[in-house]
Image (cartoon, rainbow, N blue to C red):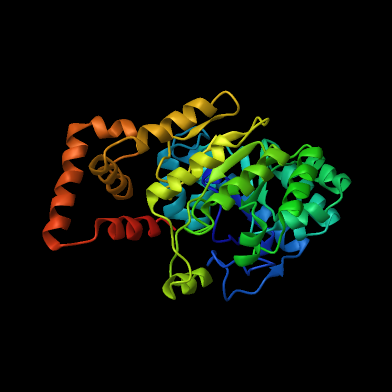
Length: 374
């Protein structure tokens, strides 16, 4: 069985099925995942063989459960035994079974570049082997969706595909060109609308900070405009982080790009949310790159609460905000209420004191800790 390198956090407990290798575009300046890797399509037969192997391992894991007195149930003990006795791949399958074996994620970066006929054949075979699966999701480029007939997307929905994850990143055309996203705002709207028209769930990813300090406002407003036109099922934040293997890092190193501070990115998110109107998307901040992970709720009802959470953070004194920024990046805090926990607060204060004693730049430490989440 082959697995690709990434998946959304929401697919952590899914079965991974690799349909294509790497990314057919692979030019985005903020991404490092597939750089230096060649894109290729796997054959339908290769993919089917992986499904057969997954079926075989699932059956062996159930046999292992019966043999050790767990009556076919996949318990944590069975998961450990499967990984130890049958190998890493079996361990992954066992975790999937433990969580109910209801979800599958199709890898890599843009599975929809496969022909519709081939993808339908794969989906049919997958469901024949695992009839209990309820959700099948994949990454997709907006440009691919914009070129795919709604009828084809509808066939994929009928065959079992339920959700597409799309990297919107920004809706501001000059920024899309600058980061070499290879798509326009108009194409993002068209692709999103086609996915929705076909009955697919749509998850759009927004990248706070991508506009730098120069284009933060245009980035927020342009992105809100696209999101308002699409009305995605989910809006997910993925805060910008730059490391040397990303092409955009060269711009940072040369002084031609400035990454906004954590507080500036929070203000950017506020501006974006403030301008989301007439949609029913579910906003989620479900990645450790994000500072305020508690931002969650369905629009329009949750909009006042989302803005209030942001304002609560921004209204804190600078010392409090710095304590929270560092605590979040250290993993001590997860939400603003954790600031009220004396033990956690003291733990962060002690780290701040040690950093001050060394003359360290606290905000640079925060950035370095954030970058480790990539």
